[in-house]
Length: 183
Image (cartoon, rainbow, N blue to C red; front, side, top):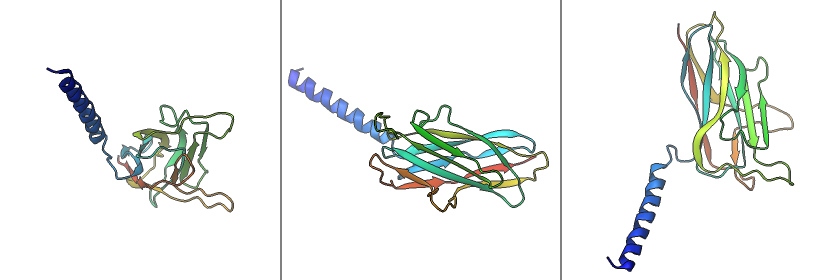
C-alpha cells in the first residue's frame, strides 16, 4: 500500500473512532441534568439515595436544593456525602440540611481564591452526591418524591442552577427521584 493511502486510512480511522466516541456518549438527556436514583426502603432503615449529574457543558459551579416532602411519610435526612463525587475536588462546597424543613441543599464552586485555580467540571456523567435518610420504624408505606425547589431567603438565591466558566447559567433540568417505603 502506498504511504499516502496508509496515512489517509489512518486519519479516517481516527476521525471515525472520534465521532463514534461522541455518539457513544450521546446525551441521555438533551442538556445538563441532575437526576436521582429511585430507592425502596423499609420502615426503620437507614438508606442512601445517589444524586447524579450528566453535564453537556463545562461547569464552574452548581447549586441543588432538593425537597423530600410527603403528607403521610416522615423521613429524616441524616447527612450528605461528597465521597467519590465528580465535584469533591472543587474548592468550595456547601451543604445545608435545615432541621424540620424536609430540604437538603448543596452547592459547589470550582475556584473562589484568585490566587489558586481549580479546573472546572468537564462534560460527563457520574455521581454528584449521596444523601443519607432514615425512615422511622413507624413510617407508613408510600412514595416520597424528591423534587427540586427553592429555599426562601431575603438576601441569597437558593434556587436550582448550574453555571459555566464565566458565571452564565447553563440550560439544565432536574429529574425527580422517588423513595418508596414498603414493609
